[in-house]
Image (tube, rainbow, N blue to C red):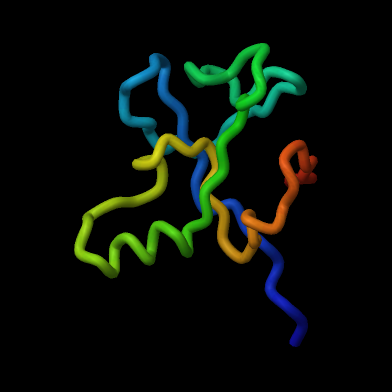
Length: 94
């Protein structure tokens, strides 16, 4: 068996800033904009935010009840070492 493929485990968005993001079944990423319907999308440098499920799991092990979207990320991933990706990296999803 080969190495498991990285996965998107959650897609999250919020209609306004400062509000907890809600998990949605699917989303549409728009080039040079971000996640459709998300308050942080637009013409600026942080259009889409990613966080590894492994990081969320570490926080949960410390006793905090958190899950995908609780850190304002749009995409929660598993099996992808996000820390090793340079700023401006482009990912192919799907």
